[in-house]
Image 1 (cartoon, helix red, strand yellow):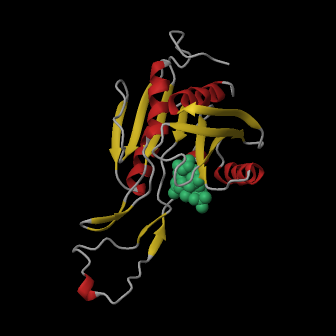
Image 2: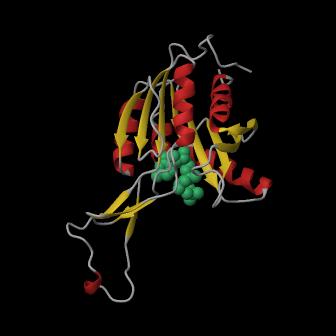
Image 3: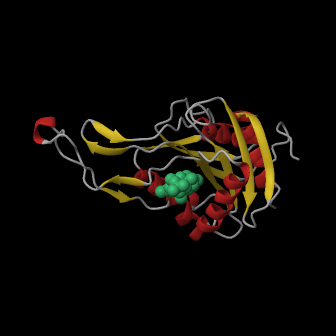
Length: 227
Ligand code: CTP
Ligand code: CA
């Protein structure tokens, strides 16, 4: 497997990574969000840059600082992230969708704050589906471009977890899918991670656990091993 370091095994490659979690506004003071910290995506961007790649980081509400030496594009909503990724992917060799993209957004963004005294004891929100950014990028894939997705799953059983991942990579049309187990205390906002990487055939091509930095390098190794 490739080793990180001066060899710069990603020199000359253009890598775009999305990281963080989108926020979907509800009114001027509220949003629907998720618990993604952006740490794993940021670690991938940093590792790719350290290995010589030209990196664009498409960020959504990172809880950690963006690394030095990458080109940063800040986004907020799923639709903004889609536009930024579509733009950056047009000239990328490797595309990694590590961001947690909201599956749905409020059907309308109110101009004024929602007031309790105008509601009853319950408040119903109507949400509309966001586009699947990863599937769109995979469908528009350029020749030789590698598209990598993530799957954060709460399934505890390993075989069931793999089955979900295999189904997901097939649906998305990605080349690799990084499956990680998440729960209330696992995966999100933590410094370590535990992942299984599957290819389009559903084969396990890599398994890694440890710091998000070391996991990032193993994911990049798996990408390079596709060539
Ligand atoms: N993803 C995306 N656009 C969306 C939703 C997800 O690009 N609207 C990407 C994520 O960045 C990730 C992959 O798709 O790389 C899998 O996301 P995940 O939430 O696990 O899958 P979903 O297809 O949204 O299915 P579900 O949440 O129902 O499991
Ligand atoms: Ca989802």
